[in-house]
Image 1 (tube, rainbow, N blue to C red):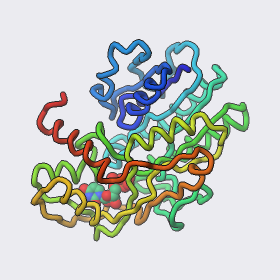
Image 2 (image 1 turned 90 degrees about the vertical axis):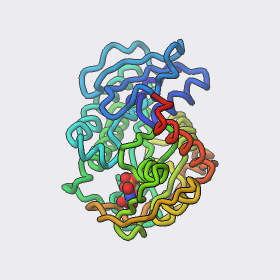
Image 3 (image 1 turned 120 degrees about the vertical axis):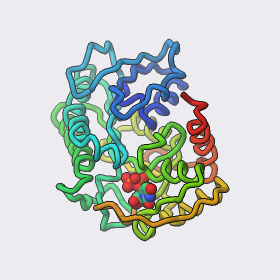
Image 4 (image 1 turned 180 degrees about the vertical axis):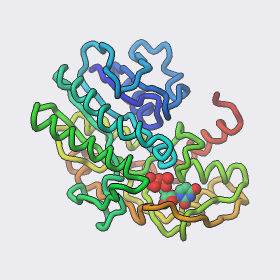
Length: 314
Ligand code: UDP
């Protein structure tokens, strides 16, 4: 099959490219490097099954040839990035979705959009099941991301209902692993960077808010399975093991062996208090569940950030 993957130089999509290529398919990766990084796909240079196009998917797309599956995975994804690029974030979920859905429609190709647990906002139901409609502040600082992804889901369903495009919607929960940006402000790179430098670990609020962290290899396996399924409604993909941010900081301290102390800083506005996916649907439909536990996933992640800090990875 020939896949088009938007955001190919980003953290999750670059791992998805690797997985799809390893299964003998061809990939056309697209990225405009707004928040992606060329080093994430540098190892694919010279791979005859991989083509790269530097382009903004919000603009008219260049001719891409025949396509079997489109995966729209482009978007700023960390709070720090989407606060910095709110308009680009809204564009890529709306204009970008429209362009890539048209591409799928013109090719009678499959289409998968990487949506997010942020669709649930600061959830009032716990754990989050796909049928929950969410508790999103439509005008808060996170709304540029949340509403962009909610629009992306809506236009995906509209193309399916109106034009019969074979669509899938993945709601991705917190994911971590090598190739995350060291300075993107998310809790995994932030805590690791601080711990590895011996700087204070900054827990926001009282640190009792929870997240559930999925290792990237588990996540991309789920995405590929979902892209082959006939399920049109959203499917949660994430690791259901939930931790408070204080507990997570302690895991980081132990695994890095750092002497860093934990300090408390103000909680950002609208920071979700609890987040854990209900993955019964993915288990039932895809036979998927995470296999990598936090400690096993953190080992290669720590090694990656050590290389970045040491300048060993350009
Ligand atoms: N967080 C923290 N310290 C940091 C960065 C983040 O305590 O230095 C918290 C943040 O307030 C949130 C959680 O970690 O409750 C996860 O934040 P992240 O930015 O990784 O992603 P989110 O899940 O909020 O999209």
